[in-house]
Image 1: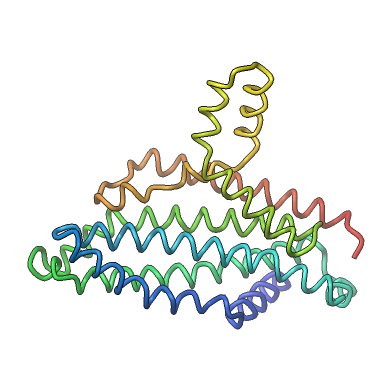
Image 2: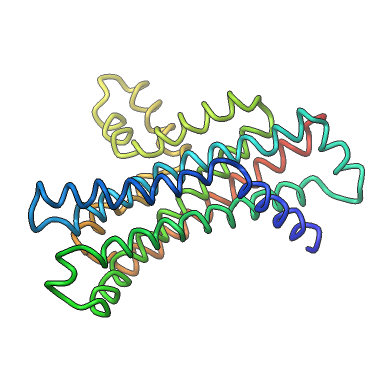
Length: 266
């Protein structure tokens, strides 16, 4: 356990040193400027615009960071022969993968927490916030409607990061990034795949789309950005079911990564 924790802390430290954390600075600049500008165009919709834009940018930047970190760290160590040095110690390969993932999960948590703080602060300084409900009531309402959505965003980003780690275990860094991005886009289009599986003109095509729909991670099911924009709380039963699905998906991806990495010659 101590070995996994040491790898996780070192991975988190390395990730925070990367230039990818600059996206948080970009988020800090873009969200207030674009959000407030959009409020002048759609008067009375400032809060919805900021929440929609903030969550969309948070998801986009998180996916970029997850692909960059997940596909980059393992491949860099393989290419530089650093893994030979690590594995020469009394360290199991599965411990290395779990430690890397926990470190990346901590880094994603830090980036999501920073961007969520910027989002909440932007909402607090909106003109609509001062003229309507007070800061305490606003924070209470955001906690009920926004926190569950942030939790699902974080879970989606963990799945994307795990996918990048999976592909990095057996492909090059560039190919791992491309495959992760492709699978992420397909996973976010799961409803369209299901529609194609039901409306395709031939039975083989319907079976093909149905098989893809079953195999890919259903990232669209974790997306509740629309509900957050309108301040609608996610039902507890739905939230629990989707969290269970996301966690099981993470376990399967990590198990596949460990199996592949155990058999790989490095």
